[in-house]
Length: 84
Image (cartoon, rainbow, N blue to C red; front, side, top):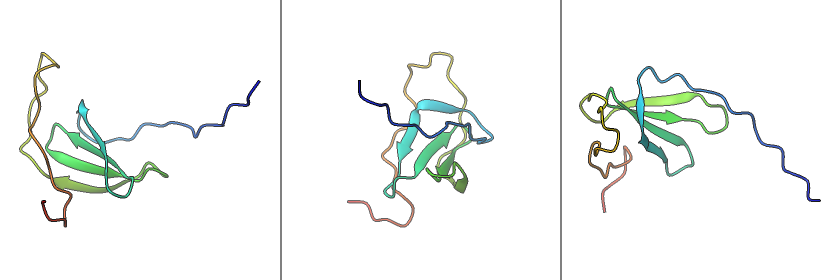
């Protein structure tokens, strides 16, 4: 029987606002990106779980009663990059 690889422990990250399940992504360097309902893009270090930046990107919005309704339209550019 094959041994299972040990997984790193999981822990929560306090963001100060709720987020939609489709508001999660990875940045160009592997960092976690979470767009919260307060309009902030939270950049999270994947190794430490620390929030390394908070960037205001869209207007704050309310959570929809019907979670299947569309959220803010993208695409968004990573700060400091040019659009293609």
